[in-house]
Length: 168
Image (tube, rainbow, N blue to C red; front, top):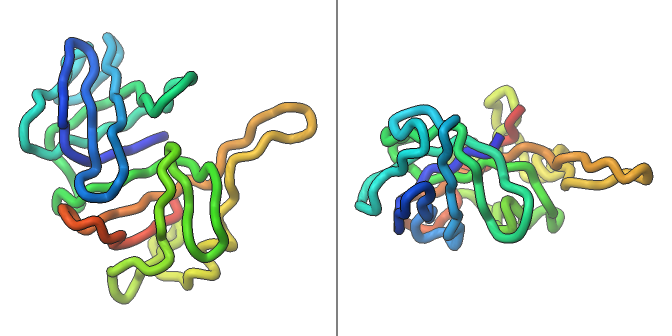
C-alpha cells in the first residue's frame, strides 16, 4: 500500500497532482475513480489550494508516477508533516533508498533520538535499517517481489528527512 501526504498543486476532473513540498518528491499524479473512498469519494478530487491531503492507494502500472487512490483524506496525520510510504525499489547502502522512482537520501534524519525505526516503532541504527531493507526483485521464474515497505517523514516545509520507518 502506498501512502502519500502532501500538497495538491493541480487538479482536473478525476485526477490531481500531489507534491511533497520542498523534498524533491513529486509531482505524483493521483487518479480517483468510483471506488475511491474518504473525504473525496466516488471519483471526486480535492481542489488545487493550500492544504494537506493524505492518499492511500496503489501504483498504477505503466509509465510515470501514477497512484490510483483507494482513499483520499483532507485531514493529515503526523502534524501535517509530508511523507511518502512505498516499497523500496533500489538502495545505495547506508545512504539512499528509491521510492516511487524518487531517490531519497536517508543517511542522516533530523529526529532524535529515533532517526530510523523498525516495524515495532523501536529506534534502530542506520546499519540495522539498511540491513533490513530489500529492494524489489524478480526471481528466476519471472515472479516480481516487492521491496520492503518504508515510510519517509519530512520536516515540512523544509526538505530535511525527519525519520525513516520500516513498515509492515
